[in-house]
Amino acid sequence: MAVKVTVEGEQRVYGDHERLLTAARDYQSRYDSDILLAKVDGKLRELQKEIIDGTNITFVTGKEKPGIQTYERSATLLMLKAFYDVAGKENVDKVKIEFSLGQGFFVSARGRFTLDQAMVEKIKERMKELVKKRLPIEKKNVHTDQAIEAFHKYGMYDKEKLFKYRRVSRVNLYCLGGFEDYYYGYMVPDTGYLRYFDLVPYEAGFMLMLPRFGSPTEVPEFVPLKKLYCTLMESTEWGEKRGISCTGDLNEEISKKGCNEMILIQEAFQEKKIAELAQAIAEQPDKKIVMIAGPSSSGKTTFSRRLSIQLQALGLTPHPVSVDDYFVNREDSPRDENGNYDYEALECIDLPVLNRDMTELLQGKRIELPRYNFKTGRREYRGEYLTMGKSDILVMEGIHCLNHKLTYDMPRDNQFKIYISALTTLNIDEHNRVSTTDGRLLRRMVRDARTRGNSALDTIRMWPSVRRGEEKHIFPFQEEADAMFNSSLLYELAVLKQYAEPLLFGIPRDCPEYLEAKRLLKFLDYFLGIDSRDVPNNSLLREFIGGSCFNV
Image (cartoon, rainbow, N blue to C red):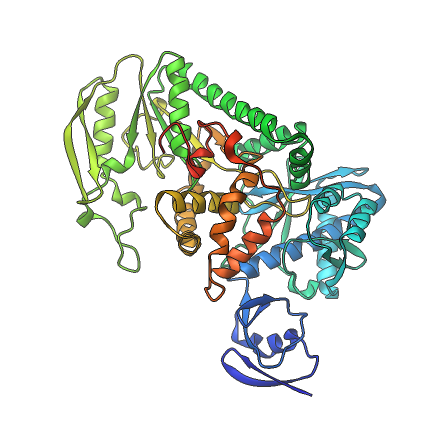
């Protein structure tokens, strides 16, 4: 029987029971990278699915977010299969995708083997062998109880615990050459698609290097980020000591012990870290300007307020200075490629005036502080004067605060630079990461709905632009920081779930942003929700859900 469909705007006829893979092969020559998924009537589908009569089909490559995420999941399965083949499954206790580090993923492993450079090379070579064989990645749908039993047998206890708290009665497992695993999302048809990767030994594990969004055939070179790695490992180890390193652990804590004590302990840990930062600053009298930078929704405002309180407790007098108040007048602002004002560009800031004022303050001179009027688009002076005394210290926040070009005329010895980000180390399970980007997106979605009246659709739509600005203006300078602060909280996704789900359900199915909303809803479904009433009013999380004592 013939199946009539519309493929990329063209009418095509295929045989009964033919798969989307056949249509993808017919159209592959029109793309400069592999087709990885299909959209069938706007819904994502794996290429292994059958073609359905009367549908409209388009294709997805690694240049789109769902495509590159599919590649990452599939390559992770490939790496794990190769790891178990090389080490011997009887010798492996645990292999864990710990966190994203720069342009790659840090992997740790425990068992009866020596994870050295020679072993990493063997795993990489085994991955290449499996790619050449074009082994199929098979999906099977099993009862949840059956999946739990399988994970226990394989020693994948994070997954076993995860599915104890899942509402669904059935689950999809993926199998590659006898190796079974669970993944949050879609997969490519076979290993032949997974040609681009690298493994690099690093610290006590190794880096899995894969193509990034927008460049599906290029594997970035690994650049060590020692400060970021240490910050992430500290948070990871702290979570493990608390017995919470994956979503199943968090759900078990919530269901069996409640959440009040967990919240208090996590908040106490963050306050301790802020106090340590304040102490480090106070012990260096030459540090007169604290400069804070980080990506969107990191909690910079609340962090700077709490840091200022700790500095005051040590006898210092902090003065907030906003880099935004040094914006050039709007008509003098640079424009982007679309002709719109580019407010994230360094050239938006009047660098000579900023450097002059800060230098004069450091010299003990009196200056008049500006205030930028965002309604008129002009810098104003309102008679606010400041002179720096012995105990005075400036606390400056802005996206460029780690970039030496911002403070080119200020002595580096007088600056203490802090990088802050919500560096999520709580994973869904040992092989499925919680993206730091997803955590920040949910934070921003909840905050923007509360403070700006923006819908979840608005936030998702503008998020790629936010990410491009971060990649350009913030991430390249993070290792310039004197200290890093992780603003993520182990329990926060269980709280954000209550606020974000209604917003995501409000996105219409016929919008392009619906696919991302659907993915985030599935992600949030892994978490048991908790009430926000136990969250302290000085918590960083209050900046997003409301109720902060800092009026942010």
